[in-house]
Length: 429
Ligand code: ATP
Ligand code: MG
Image (tube, rainbow, N blue to C red; front, side, top):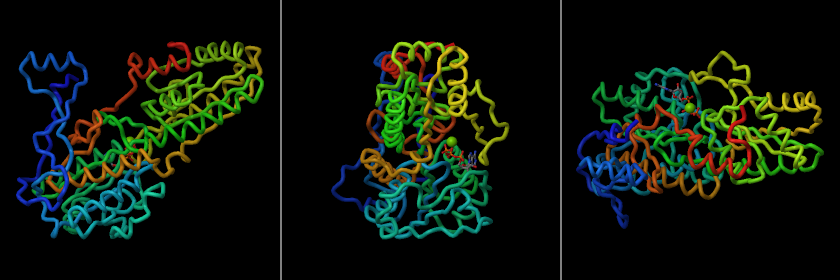
């Protein structure tokens, strides 16, 4: 898609007429923008054509706000899989609403979108600064999470009945599509309720968002697993260490973990197809020359090689075949047929990593994401998420982020760096 085709406009509930209660902060003007293209020639082309430069609205506190904090009630919901930093974001939103703006009532809806539907009977938590005081030290999510479709109309009934003015939805692509559906129903009813998304994807695969929270923590924890795999590989004759990491459709964690631990010899990601014969030939050469090898495989890699379950999960996401177990079993068996005995150790740290507390970098990132989400919500912006682009926090319309995935470009710089680090052949077909 050409960047001129992208719509960067953020929907608003109405004019901001209330002075912000914040003091001593740098307010962001409404015309501050973060440039979208990085490529100089793309910028020059825009200028030559006399077109406005494509850019995101800059996030941050505004001098005038839409909601009257003394009357405002807010809600927070977390959906989808666990990711380090969820609790940090919840805490940051509560503290910012309370301390920056003086909002007294924040509901924590339980177990994802289930908590917004009356029929499930989950009572929301009352989130106060005291209730979230130590939250950032814990992994998981205080609110619980869930998958599965919910009745959007019933969800908006709940928001209306509880007089919620801003809903903060923390979750992945599904959650954001759900948030958009909720916004549309709010619009049909002509209600003044803002919906602000905070993108949660451990895989870092949300489009038009440079970084998502939890990714850094995941890479640093993945490195520990790769370290063990390397020690196991070096400790055995013809040793192979195999680590399966997260990455359903995008292999960023596997790629960065391979760079972080540059003793990885093979990095397998969903974006770059390979055949078992191609991998085995390269692996055999590596073991013949060096006596051991480390392989990192993203969970969504090589899906054409494995049997895939027919069913989907409750939210309709396709279930993956287990490439880790497949390689664990096939590599020793097939190498034996080729006259090579190997010792393979398999490590799958996925659930350990997902439930970790955030590391220092992610904690900072989550805190600022939560603050920027609150600033955006207070101005009545809606159907948007807080993004991060060129090291600045941005406002991103949900349609720009939730319907296409960010993926590794096999011809791009990142993959070229991975190939240079692992030394694996560009093609293993
Ligand atoms: P993860 O990437 O970790 O799986 P996710 O947010 O993508 O996170 P899902 O389980 O796919 O997780 O979706 C979260 C919730 O959003 C589910 O309850 C799902 O039913 C709901 N949802 C997804 N798409 C829509 C939609 N178009 N309309 C309404 N709800 C939706
Ligand atoms: Mg998802």
